[in-house]
Each structure stands twice: as C-alpha cells, then as structure tokens.
Image (tube, rainbow, N blue to C red; front, side, top):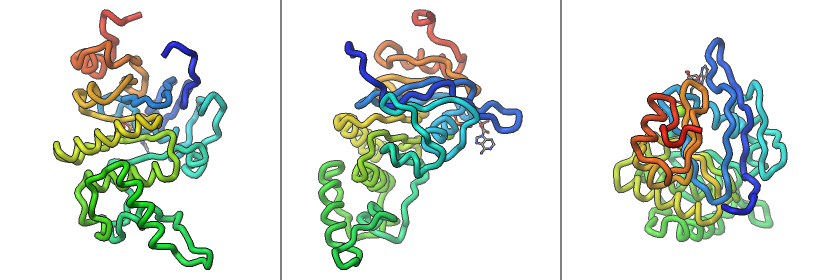
Length: 253
Ligand SMILES: Nc1ncnc2c1ncn2[C@@H]1O[C@H](COP(=O)(O)OP(=O)(O)O)[C@@H](O)[C@H]1O
Ligand SMILES: [Mg+2]
C-alpha cells in the first residue's frame, strides 16, 4: 500500500440519532478494493446502523459518503445498487420455496427474445458462478429451504457477485452457522477478496476477524474507538478496544 490509492468507500463524519440515543456519533471509516475490513463492537455499538446508512436502508442525519473518490448520493437501497454495493444479511432474504437459480435472479429475471422467463439460461448462469464460488454445490434443483446455512449464504453471495457487486456489506454472515459451514463462508470471502471486491465484515468472533480481516474499525457507544491493521494487534488488543473503548498502549497516538 505504497501508492496513494483511492478508497472504494469513505464514510465521513457519519451521524444518526434515535430519540436521545446517538447510535452513530461522528464516525469516519474507509475501505479499499480487495480489502476485508472488520466492523467490531458490542451489541448496540452502532455497527448495523452505520452499515445501513451506507446501504441506504437508514437515512443519515449527517455525514458524507464517497465511492471511488466521488460523493455518492445514497438515500435508499436502490441507490446503493447503482454503486455496485450489496448487503448480505444474517437473516437472508431468500425465497424459501424457490431454487438457487430463481433466487439468484429474483426480481431481475432473464427473459428470452420472446419475453418468456429464460429458466435454462438462468440455471446455466447459476451453475457457472457457483462453480467459481462454491464448486461443491450440487443442489441446483431443490428449494433453498432444503439447503444448509452455508449453502444459503453462498446463494446470496453468488447473487451479489453475479450483479457485479464491488462493495459488499456482510452483517454477521457466520453467526448462525456451524464450524464447517463457517469455513465455507470464510473461503468464499477470501475468494471475493481475490476478485478485488471490498468487504465490510461485521463480526463478533475476534479469532475469525484476526484470520479474515486486513483492518478493523472498532466502535463503542456509537463512536469510533479506532482503526487498526489486524496484523499489528493481538486478539486481546482487539478485545480491549471493544470492551474498554481504548486503543492498545503501543498504538495510542
Ligand atoms: N430503528 C431503530 N430505532 C431506534 N433505535 C435503533 C434503531 N436501530 C438501532 N437503534 C439503536 O441504535 C443503537 C445502535 O444499534 P446497532 O447499530 O443495531 O448496534 P450493533 O452494533 O449491535 O449493530 C442501539 O442503541 C440501538 O438500540
Ligand atoms: Mg448489529
């Protein structure tokens, strides 16, 4: 990181209050292409609200968003898509009774020149992208309700990637998963990073953050405690930042 690269995302001085609660209190963070950046903090720290202001799901009270160096107008989720920004929620927005391909193209179906829904092309495209992201996936003709949590995550991730996501927000993507499934999702995240996608990863699991993330933004009570390179800190340092709300001694500047 020697050249002055332009951040994929920069959120400056972001603010949001609910009644008397300052959910996000003057927070400035960034994200570079091909980077996985952890967003850490206790329950109620403001992580989700901050990310929802980026995805357009929550209107901000103040602050500015820059995408690739230009000011971005994001006031609803539709705007966010124009900037190739997609969110993957813990509670996945998949249609349970539909198969992987139908979910991948939900609301953006491919049609034949005669205007019919083009099931075979959608399935072929789904097989292509899954081969790239999760080659073990075989359950193309089953409703996604029959899939495991990790497989469902991979369908949601495939959907984002197929529609050219450059920026991904993942809110606790492994919270509901077992160890094997978690591994699958972590490998997916790594693959997305290699493709140059920038990822904000909200995660409770400090060990996972240590393994997955390049940097971490730590929040407490709506404020930014600090931003660290994960390689420069221990898991205990990260925990101390979350709990005490202070940067480790050797990094306090
Ligand atoms: N829609 C809402 N209405 C009122 N208060 C909210 C809303 N969303 C979040 N909050 C409050 O904002 C603060 C930050 O919440 P959140 O960003 O969800 O925390 P977390 O870091 O756990 O994701 C909390 O005090 C929460 O109760
Ligand atoms: Mg949250």
